[in-house]
Length: 252
Image 1 (cartoon, rainbow, N blue to C red):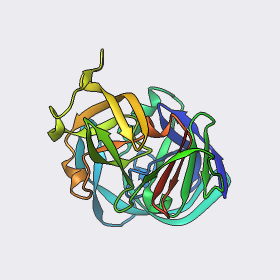
Image 2 (cartoon, one colour):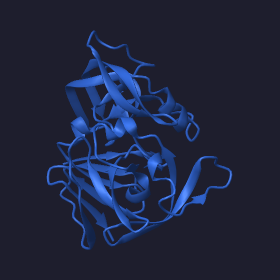
Image 3 (cartoon, rainbow, N blue to C red):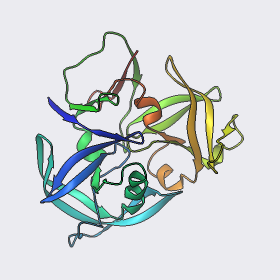
Image 4 (cartoon, rainbow, N blue to C red):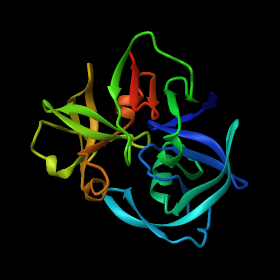
């Protein structure tokens, strides 16, 4: 059982980190298939190229280079000899810096590492626990199948739809092909954004969820989903994402 403090920045989880001597932050990102380093601070090893799904205004396929992390220190936890990708994370770092100019995004901690744990998250307290023995007295339990990604089923527009559960997403992404299937409310002063009046996860209801339509072709090539959801369902309450048992616990 390991506890870590984190910085919630615009609904995202940032962990203080040191990577092969470089100090900065890592983004907890269950929507990343592999752990990644920011090419701004690290040079890729001689490994080959791999194709990834990346969101930067629209979902696209992009090449990254295979590399290896010799040492990743996350507060009181140290990981060694990790396979990783080296890629352009400038789009993510720029977005975080609009909220906190001190952010130095060294990389993403992906589900290749995280799927070996259960993750306790408390956004209000800024606390992450790996393999915590915590439990909730009253909670909602949702199936969380784990394949390429962890996914959950949400009800939007009175129909169940499967979404990637992504701690690296602070807005809901919806497949552009769903436009017109349910009511949305345009967001004032934010072109392209809108709100979903109601989103349901098991017996829990979320109101006015910020969302955008996007081309999810690259994502759908590896996962049978129609969107991505993150802090909208994870941040309002304490949660446990149990990758081993493929269950999501949400405190009531």
